[in-house]
Length: 407
Image (cartoon, rainbow, N blue to C red; front, side):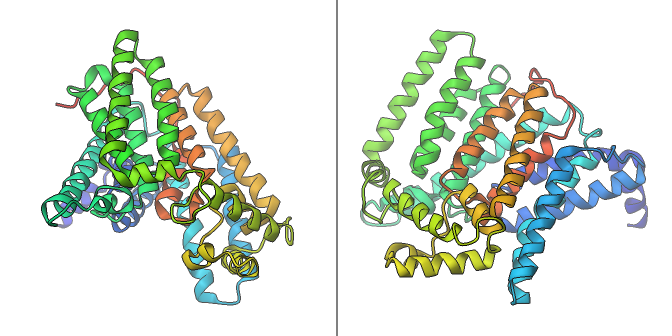
């Protein structure tokens, strides 16, 4: 056993292992919170070991890295300034520390993660998406069609459809959307690639996350138009996708109801009217401390008090946050925190752009789109995915023609 560990710790072995810790980290997002946390520990441990053992610390004059460090420490300062409950403070601390650890891990490996990583990363993520989709659909069919005497459509839609690994529909559909982009990128080298694409897109429809469906109906056709030279093939796929969406609407009453009530004043389906009301109340809270905010724990309390004053029963009952990451950050850490977050996001997008990473830029646009209607940092999946894009933008330029093959 000692010899195995000694061998593992050699320069060459560390260099070989680090890319796979990155792959494990991204794929773990689809496999539950426990594996997310485990993968982060593995990624950070091997990144630090590799950087120390191989003596390859990158230059520290990276603007994006320092922006993120300042943002995290600013948030931590607010947490311990506003919170009197140490236990609550430590709980909030674990919201932002992983963001820093993930980005530092990518930064330490920014020279070591070469072009050969990305095809493997995308390959593994596609496989993880397909495995997740098939298991979730299979479980949904079993619980919703086979097990009951009549069809229970709830198990074939929304959060129930992500119950195998306990991932909320909003985040799971975002992962599937990114998986679709990876499939399109490598369409020429993936056997049955378009079938895989349609499986994931159909899963997005059944998950019934309206914002993700809206984004997918814009992003996927636009990305396909760029990547598919044969325009006839593009229009055929577009027609098939439209038929799938219509079938999903006809077969799944949950999706049909969510689409129908998208602008309804009813609170049952979290429509536009509900979010507008949440945002209006959030703005009232924001006006009381616009510069530095309240800190995460106090924000939730302030929002709850505001909802009670306005007798906003749905928000009180469901303990709603602001359902917009930019508003949530403004409440948590004021305009200072919001400006820091925007600076990080702009720098990340710029890095992806100058590195000519079209696929990751489109995927990043999907992430930003979801931040408009969801406080992404309130869930580990959203925070980890955001950190991944910040980290991946620190890695040296990649080639868009990297190839993978899925048998």
